[in-house]
Image 1 (cartoon, rainbow, N blue to C red):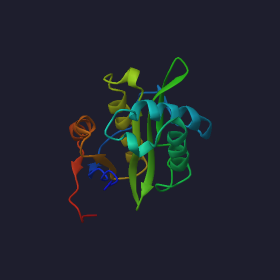
Image 2 (image 1 turned 90 degrees about the horizontal axis):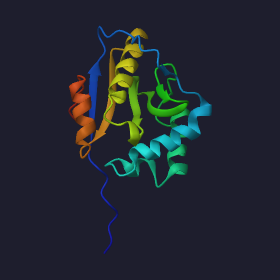
Image 3 (image 1 turned 60 degrees about the horizontal axis):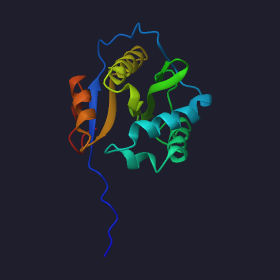
Image 4 (image 1 turned 135 degrees about the vertical axis):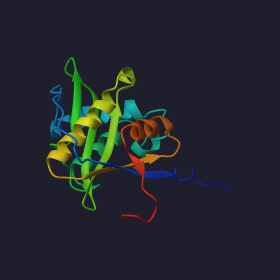
Length: 169
């Protein structure tokens, strides 16, 4: 008997934003709807072969649809001014997309081109996102991380994110 693969275990992590200042890093910009196709390509490149690959479907078209759904509010209202992208030579190489889920900012997606991993882009993007949200008056940022994605979880925890026990806020 064939069983569908089990849904991966995810954990909610939150970080407080008290005292965080907006980044002076002006190398990032807010994404626009025109960025959706290149963001889909970037997302597929970043997620392919990771524990989260199935979250973005089976290729560039499904990853692009995931980005479009994020912009369209599928995961709560999209916050373009708190969402950021990084470019190199006119090509998107990293992104952080933020929505509001149940009244709390949610780092819905953060991803980096496979050719640019290990350079601190995700960390810098998340720090910048946290600063923007803090200046907008938010006191925390939430995200979900797949249990098997130990690299992402280590990054988040090193930035002050802590696991929120099931059943709390």
